[in-house]
Length: 152
Ligand code: FAD
Ligand code: NAD
Image 1 (cartoon, rainbow, N blue to C red):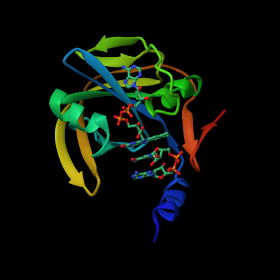
Image 2: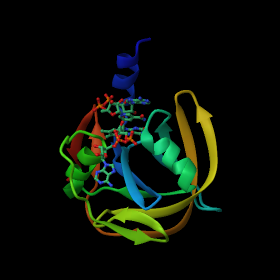
Image 3: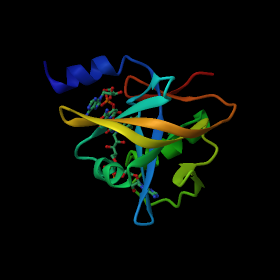
């Protein structure tokens, strides 16, 4: 099975879009991710899968914490910025939430401590314990067949 066929198959699973944010040595870094899921209610755990070659991989290990920002349909540009799909540098305003940077106007912000990590092939699964969260009304940004979509 080649990589393209696997990606085509996985792209049939419609997801939301998140930006993972963290801070190391006063520098904020963000990365777009759709490999996100809710894991446990007691304790409150979520999971993200980060490629080993992504800069975010080592930064989360160093920070030992991260935030998950679930994007609204108005935030497609944020997803493109943090996936490297917009080449020019953009000035993004972050806010502090429980000592972790977050992107404002997201549908949800989850501030997490790293609870566990699991190496899985060329990615690492980071399980986050949710310390606190914000929720806002709005419609989600979606990703299906390698393209951004709107549900509404
Ligand atoms: P870089 O590639 O260096 O940074 C990413 C981009 O964010 C750069 O353009 C950078 O300029 C910008 N940026 C970072 N910090 C800031 C800041 N403070 N201010 C302004 N701009 C900033 N990869 C995964 O590993 N797991 C996934 O689940 C995943 N899901 C994805 C879902 C979608 C819909 C898309 C489009 C991509 C996904 N990717 C995923 C791929 C991942 O987003 C890219 O490979 C990304 O470029 C990896 O980021 P990086 O940490 O290596 O940092
Ligand atoms: P695509 O067709 O590459 O993505 C479709 C689906 O394939 C994704 O939703 C994801 O489930 C899966 N996928 C893609 N790349 C993967 C990877 N390296 N590891 C594990 N699963 C992967 O969509 P696209 O618009 O061409 O993506 C843009 C870029 O973002 C590509 O470079 C892609 O590799 C990357 N991406 C990575 C992941 C990930 O690492 N989990 C997820 C989505 C997109």
